[in-house]
Amino acid sequence: MKFIMATALLGLYMVGSAVVSAETPVAQQPVSQTLDALSENDSTIQPNDPIFPDGYQLVAYLNCGAQQRTPENATPAITLVSGDSYIVPGAGGAVAALARDATEVVYAIHGLNPEADYVLGFTWWDADDNNRMQSVRFSVDSESWESVLPPTRPAAYNNDALTWARALLPLAAPYDAIETLRVAFVNEQGPNAVVSELWLLERVAPARNKRVLIVTGDDYAGHDWRATAPELAALLREDDRLEVSITECPAFYGSPLLRHYDATVLHFKNYEERLPLGRECWDGVTDHVAAGNGLVLVHFGCGAFQDWDGFVNLAGRVWNPALRAHDPHGAFTVRIADEEHPVTRGMTDFEITDELYTCLDGDAPITVLCDAVSVVDNETYPMAFIVENTGGRVFHSVLGHDVVALQAPGARQLHRRATAWAAGLDVAP
Image 1 (cartoon, helix red, strand yellow):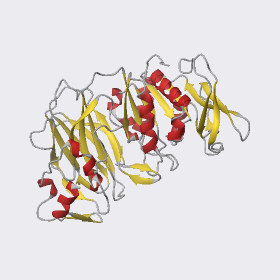
Image 2 (tube, rainbow, N blue to C red):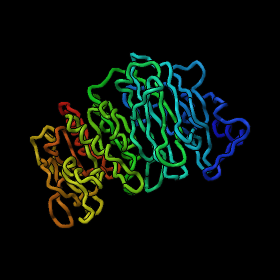
Image 3 (spheres, rainbow, N blue to C red):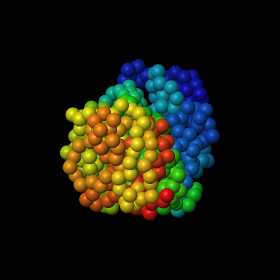
Image 4 (cartoon, helix red, strand yellow):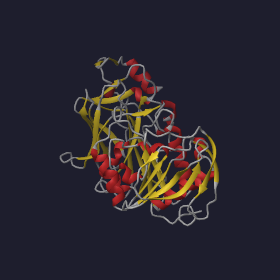
């Protein structure tokens, strides 16, 4: 791998939280890297990555630890303004190299076309598990800065293990008609601010009717969101009216850029002790729905925001750990309980191999669309429902334990139709 070879030759390494470098820092040694070489260099993304919004193309990529700027004469160009480059011992791939600074890592993005649509993406990682908290800020003049991502852990968790996270920040107004943007990764807690990769996406196809963001990045160990989130994106993309993308940063619910999306899919179960979310995230998702936008909750999304008492009013029903969790994983029939609602009109009962949840609690007004009968107690439990009195369109389904469950034709149809409905579209077959 080119960037690892280059940094190794320069003798850069890290011991604990101290960094030792050779005479010339890596940041002063630009590494020519084309977009076609992403897979060769073990980047966390691919040229047509499932996390990218539909209709966008990768136009700039920077390995923040191995490059000071994108290749010469490239437009748009990403340039490091402040920060140094480091290698994380024992790590592999693009996230082994990162930029960091005690206060903030700053980049300038030049050559933006004011007539184009862009989305900025990045990868970050609290690789040495040093309890970092970071925020992200945008500026158009280097003087006034706006927080576009509230303080959060620069990490994700999968299979109960700390891992890197990839996030998307759409350049929505007032950042949608500028030529230069400055981006700061700000240290809010811990030894320094870090970022591993930075990339820019540009729209190259006509805009679709509605924008949908799948929000993931943490869950119970038995839920492999790195597999199920792309599967969710794939089934939603079967409706070509939806522009679908994925972020692995639940704190995006606290971003003012949330207004860019017509609906979001809550596909995570956060744990306060490892991925805390501030009140601004709770308020952000509520305000977004109250403004008339859509929300779709999938599977263990019923367990998100456990420390927020008001979550039940948005989710309709929430996980109660005092109740029996679910039937043994296996096949069962999902019955269409409401044949008149736009989401389920014309649908028929379907078979699925999944977890039949029996752990939901709450008394918020809901309309049950689908249900199933437990083989354990012979009781009927809701599998999908609409939450009333939220101001927007909220659909909640506990189906979707794994990729196999999401590949069931009935489940695919249900989630696809429900997301289109939540985004404000007429439901397609």
